[in-house]
Amino acid sequence: MASLNEQERDFIRRHLDSDLKALALAAHRYKGITVSTLIPRIAALRKLREKAPSLFRLDLEIPSLLSVEQASSEVVARFKTSLFSGKHLLDLTGGLGIDAYFWSKRFEEVTYVEREPLLSQAARHNFARLSATNIQVITAEAEDFLKKSSQTFDLIYLDPDRRNPSQRRLFRLEDCSPNVIALHKLLLSHAPKMLIKASPMLDLTQAQQRLPQIEHIWVESWKGEVREVLLLAGHSSVNADEVPIEATILSGESVQTFQFTRAEEHSCLPQLSEPLRYLYEPDPSILKAGAFKVFAKRFGLSKLHLHAHLYTADALELNLPAKIFAVEAVFKYDRKVARQFLPERRANVVVRHFPDSPDQVRQRLGLAEGGDKYLFATTAKDGRKILILCIRLDSSSRKMA
Image 1 (spheres, helix red, strand yellow):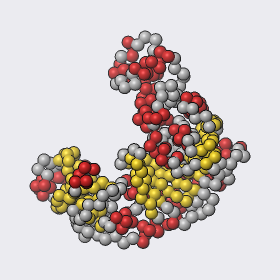
Image 2 (spheres, helix red, strand yellow):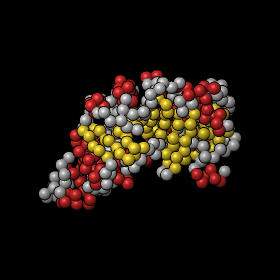
Image 3 (cartoon, helix red, strand yellow):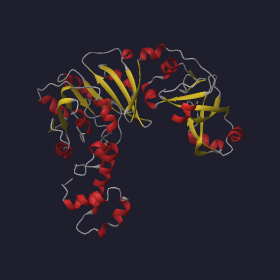
Image 4 (tube, one colour):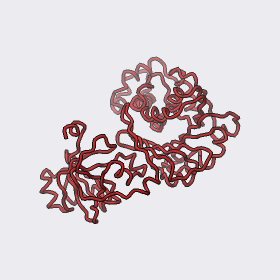
């Protein structure tokens, strides 16, 4: 994107929170300004303000809305960069530069490498505006840089491109660019460790089989959604069952973690139970990490079914990394029975280890979505298909209970 003049910057400043569709329709009113070229900038700046509020400035260069959408959010970037520090870090897939900026607060020097000239040019401009003077910007393909450089680093960070030329999303490490599986020896010839940001859809077991040098795994969630998976790899092959897996729940300034190993998960034999007074639904990061049985053991909970991943107890367990519900009723999967418990014919339907989708459950029971009741459709320990009617306990409810 070309640099803006003062009139254009003022236009963006005045319309940063305007309705962009209405603004486009009224474009003819603004003489001397090409509104159609400024609307994408406004959309990109809005997204940046949402994802990285402490970096937001009107004089930053944002090549495209997509570049912001693919960048790390500030909360996630702050967490992962808090894990390491040192003298020199190589960010081999620089992108918009949000990660590099936060890495620059933890390392004395950061080398930012990006293959797209528009992105690297924007990053250079933005780092200067943000006074991030310890970041060196290089425009190059990751593999070319590694082959030509003789430098060594304390840590290499990569966020491989997870879209193919037709913009289809990719999940496997070997399908992304750069291919860390093919390049791992070259990468580790420049640093003792590399940290890989992977897709939330990554199959962790498959990734460890393809890259046995993985030493630690983080699964990060924010606002109830898994945002990214981090893989730390070194020079030695590691027994996959002994690798620490850390589910990390980010919430503003607080961080809640749940760490385990697959060996611990394999050794657990959870107790099964009918639904008791309280129902627990683990944070998505815990489920993605695969802590199905160890979660029950760690907190003294019972599972409803070995494969349902819903947990129950008569005691209210506070501060668990889970949504907590008070159970009001348990009944069979039947329209007439459901309407006895839900005369308002409305509930938030959640399906766990159940043959029907939420839409199919609502259709069969004649329910609308919403309200303050939650209806879990799941499988009991004896294989029966059951419905569990609950009220979710918020923070104040938990304190009162």
